Image (cartoon, rainbow over all chains, first blue to last red; front, top):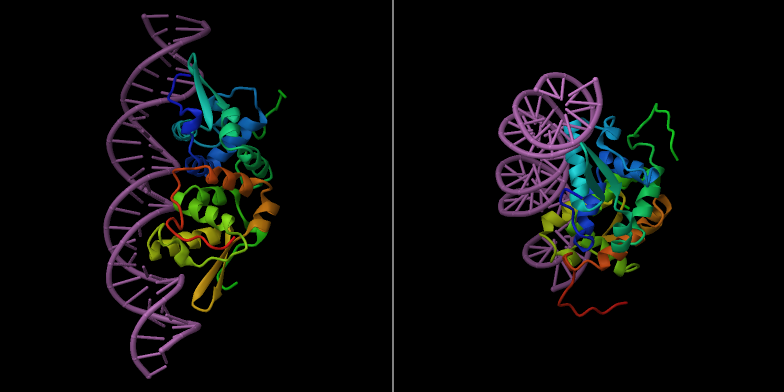
Length: 118
Length: 118
DNA sequence: CCAATTGTTCAATAACTTTTGAACTAAGGA
DNA sequence: TCCTTAGTTCAAAAGTTATTGAACAATTGG
């Protein structure tokens, strides 16, 4: 944990909702949920936006308390803060992710990829 | 139903989340949920914002499919579209409202009021 | 009919958010 | 050491959303 993250009780509902109300960020969260346990690095998401713009969106997610970013070497390992979000807003993340999974209009991550891991 | 409302399947997840990600609108939704079955008119919310600004926020909620506004005389009867939202995004509204109910930072509607009805 | 009440619309402005490119840092491998 | 890879920072530009006040419409009660 290198970069600033809010503590669990600092996570704010309107901020989380506003942050998830962006299609790029919602796609990132959906992908992180699908690949939970497999920490992701930024470059996974380069088909959603430019590197600079991703840096911006990932910072928003981190500052809102939705994700955790850990510096490992020259990479960032990005994970969903599922436990914290479930504690703070029970059921919210699950219903958002379920709804996002059924959303055909959200941009997809990793299309045309040999999806290997579980 | 006088004003334009999206149909159930036109309701979009990112738009709903973005619309709920505003403290004024989240307070309105929380209040509507608490007083469900009792249709509200705009003026109930005048302690949240100016009349003009409320008109704007209530239009946003309506256009996103979160509320329904019906013209009755010179008033609007505003109700939560709970059935439609539950059908489209199961569990989402409940978890948002539960989280909003626990949020001390959200502006309150109808404080210092003799709250009469159920 | 007149006035009050309820809410909308419009245009302007203020305030934010998103996107961009260029320049940068920091780690790792050859 | 030098080069590459991974990501950040900064300032500018573009775009969007929120807020305001003045003017408007429509209904209702006197």
